[in-house]
Length: 377
Image 1 (cartoon, rainbow, N blue to C red):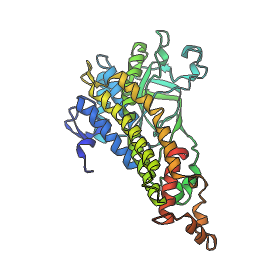
Image 2 (tube, one colour; image 1 turned 90 degrees about the horizontal axis):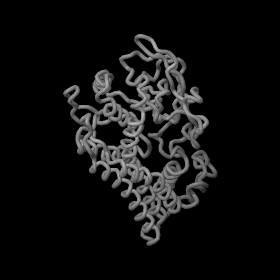
Image 3 (spheres, rainbow, N blue to C red; image 1 turned 180 degrees about the horizontal axis):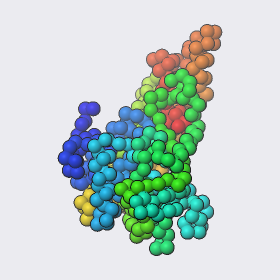
Image 4 (cartoon, rainbow, N blue to C red; image 1 turned 45 degrees about the vertical axis):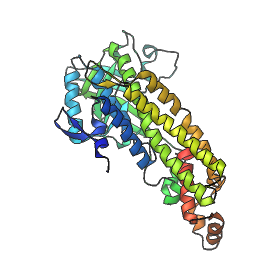
């Protein structure tokens, strides 16, 4: 709220301020502000906030469709998204089945066109690992790989409401999901959380106005590559934002235990900070070395975006290890809230769990937060 320039941008498409999560990246500053915004939101929520894939899908489609007949209809959809501030789920990953086989050899493992009509197309298949889809208004589907000329049925890109006929969302399980039915302390992060689902498409009809690719196989690879670059950039924002929360919780636990001034604990916090800032630096670096595309958008440096993603596949796990080391064994052996509320056992537990400063509740909340962020979400 105190950094409105990060969250609001001016859209030339509707000549009005829009949520940056619906904005098209038309300057290097747009790319920089995107990463900075993602870090702030990641710090505020302490988890995945489920807007990035849709934002990156909008920009990948706008860039890739430039010069194609469907670009104008995509712009009309974009205007609708911006006016209504819609939440989008970008759907790219197909089940793929036997990875040795092409889509043509196992068509049921890829989202595909099953019928072409004059005013619409009908699609069937599935998309996997769909983060935030149950929170979204629309699904924006895209191919998940390069396609050969004889694989036109799999070259599909379209927008469809989440509740359209023929769409089923199958919610995924998480290690600590049943905790969310209990006391807020044991939930760790009681206010925010991510979710994923498998999306089933069973003869879903897409009107032409929302069809962006319908057989144009040559566009599949550029679309995937463009989306991948933007989304790998995104990790340089959201993950460091989450890392800020983890570092803060770890520092709090050290203080509550009375070891915040111990050199080895400080070394761990410094290392966590170094890892976190390295991830963020990658997001900023690939944004600053951007290039202008024929569509007028700006594309991140692909090599540095890939480096950012590579760092994110490693550094959060090392940060988690360090956080768990600071938290200590109580993070995984802490009794539940109902035990602390027990009239006889509760007072004893509170006595033994209280650290050097603060209350037992403060320590329990911090422990559960670190647990949730490192092994429980």
